[in-house]
Image (cartoon, rainbow, N blue to C red):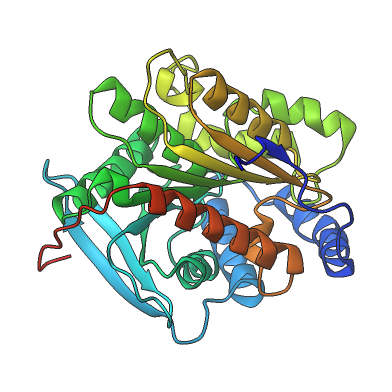
Length: 333
C-alpha cells in the first residue's frame, strides 16, 4: 500500500520532549538573541552549540570516523568525514549528509550524533560534508561545496541511484538546491532524499507567519533571518539557488520530510512537500506534534527522535530496495 503524503506520527509528545523544549526556551532562545553576529560572535556561537550537542547528541559508541580532505573532479576541495556506526555492514550505497545551522555555525563534527545514528539505523556509511561557512564565505560557496561532495562520491563509484541525500535545516536547503542544480545542468539526481526540518524560504517570511501562531522554543524568526543573511547578504533574493524554483519536467528524488510541530519551519516543510508533489515527485511529510527544530538530533534523550530515525531508516531501505544496485568502488574511497 502506498504511503500517505502527509502523516502525523503521534498524537502526544513525551514528557522528555516537553521538558527539553521548556529548558531550551529559557536557555538557548535568550542566549541566541544576545550573541553578536560578527565573526567573533559567530565563533562563540559555534563553541556554545558544539558543546551543547556534545552533551545531548553524542556519537554512538564504537562509531568509526575518517576525515576526508580531497578534491572533486573539477578540482574543488572536498572536506568532511566518513561515519560508520558499529553495525554498518553495507557498502553498496551511501548517505550524503549536509548539516544545517544557518550556513554559519555547525559542522560534520557537531552532527556526529545524527550521522552515527543514521548509519546505525540504515546500515549504510555516511559521508558528512563540511562546507565553507558564513560570514567568511557567502553564497554560493556552501552550495558549490555540496555539489563538489556529490561529484566526489560519483567519482568514487557511487551511482546516483545508490546515493541517499540527507540534511537538516539550512543543510536541507542546500540538499534541495543540489537536486535542482543537477536538473538544470542535465545530470542524474540521487534516488532518495531525507530532510529534517528543512529551511525553504531564506527570507524567513514563512517562519515569521508561523511564529504568530506558536513561539519556537529555540530562536526567533528575526534572529534566524539575521544569521542566514550572513550567508545570503549581497545575493539576489530571487536567485533560483535561493528560492528553490520547481518547474515541470524535473527529475526529483523520492523524498521524506520530517518536521516538528513546535518549530517555526513547519510551514517551510509543508511548502516544500507541496512543491515536490506539484512538480511530479513523490514526498511523504511527517509533522511530529510539539517537537522542536531538528528533534532527531536529540535521539539520545528523546523517544520521538529515536522513532523518527527508525522511520527515516525504514524509508531509505524501502527506496533503495526499489533501485538497481550499481556500485564500483574505487580504492581511494
